[in-house]
Image (cartoon, rainbow, N blue to C red; front, top):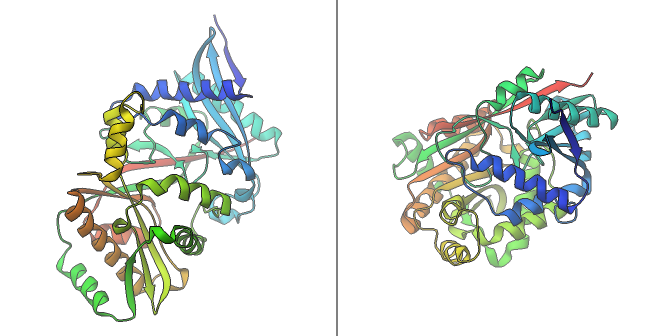
Length: 384
């Protein structure tokens, strides 16, 4: 009987095989949206992805009878190691990600290999799946396989969770995304809160200005790193990562869909909204050539009827748990809602991901009548 063989990836050819294997697994899934291969290659390239500047990553491919049957990453983030343990990461914490397996035996072999590598590197605990950064695709999809994911959200088969738990892992954290019908106005109470804010001369909710893109990104980063600094799993963005993300995201940034809130002229909150590029990628099947680029360029100019995802928002910590914090959030969401429906004919929005115990964001999501449509789990295990 053939044995499962786990091979480390060590070069560009291996990284290409790693990416293509993941694409092959994803192609089997109902509602999966093929991503651009070049983008996926960049994520695992230590030269092109600035995450590697503060992380050590080892990719593995599983073979059975010479055939690739699974993959996994094991990685150590120096910035995560430096965080307080009570925030979820901290000393001794390593990660696994990019998890795909043909069967449970392969899954366990991959998880064992990732843990053995982490143990050799001095780690005592493993969390995952997180692929690769917490800011990229964290968590395993537990609920929501019945519809397509939005931009930058993972899509996995439901049975992976049982395989991971059978390997001795337990759930460490749950993440949610919230679905919102943006054609409907908010409740009378929320509308009154929004109107009160719009009458307040101290408050100014403005569009992000692309002509001052670098400065605007710096403002958003400053608020983000302050607003999220006490959250579970927080790892600060580095300047290199900010520059990289800003360059990559700039083509899908529409000024009227991204807001900065100012109080007395000082930026204190932001909300980013991305048109769901998966709408376009689904039509071109993740391939720019030979003619997919034409459709993609047309979509980028005017993403008509696109779904809208709010991946990030933040309010300075000094305003947390205040009435103004929620007021600013409602004002930004409503402004974006009106722009998305009016200019692009959009009907659906998605908020997330949101930590299960982020009471402020959960309350905001519930108060605008959004509902949980996808659930992700991050698992943990001590390394013996």
